[in-house]
Length: 340
Image (tube, rainbow, N blue to C red):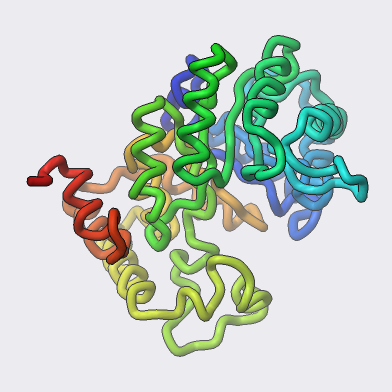
């Protein structure tokens, strides 16, 4: 396991992060404990969760695990998120000071700890001035309830605005961004990655396996089995069958399979995760698993280093596609500093 700075902070985290969204639902408490223990044994020290995951049940499972292993609290970095509804009241959602105060306190109770190391806005809130959210973060840092502030699912302009406001008002900085990022979804490279590089913001990619598309379990022309995420929800989300079932996806999957087949020590999931982990500005890749066996297969990426030839091949086949100005060819040349 490698260790990298959490954004521009001095805190070190493992370059693989254990995502816990399945805990308390698809993964019961016993299996969740087994995953947490195995992740620590592998050298991991970074956990990611959110209050909205299974309506608090995920944080509760982690809290029960911590209660049985109090000695590990100071060894691990815990990240959680707030933003989405956890109740029926008009202020039970969003990034307002009222909601985040309640949400953070509730997360701390469920986790059984007096602080979280990274507290993240789960998404942008168009109703709340971002200055209000940033001042809440700064107050929470000063109060010792959180160590660092981060955001998730922000667009480029939203992230840049937040970063500049923290600098202008001398508030606790934004140290991380949690976006979707994988071989199938690389559009953040147009604007969001450059913002992170310029501002020293670490990227925490979620869905590095593209909702299962990059595991090799789906085949062209074969209906997904019901026991898989796509089989159960073929029309759900950004990884829906009608969104991803196209020539570009299968070209990427075939190339990924060819690279993995050429490495006796690597599976398709491990290669896909290793590719994301080696991208610019990436701090830690969030793994998600229903079972301990699935976690074991992804942990293989911890020691996997892709060759330059393998990275070039995967980069080429998965290059982000856009014909719209100022992206497309113009954006590509702009990143390369070769505009006339």
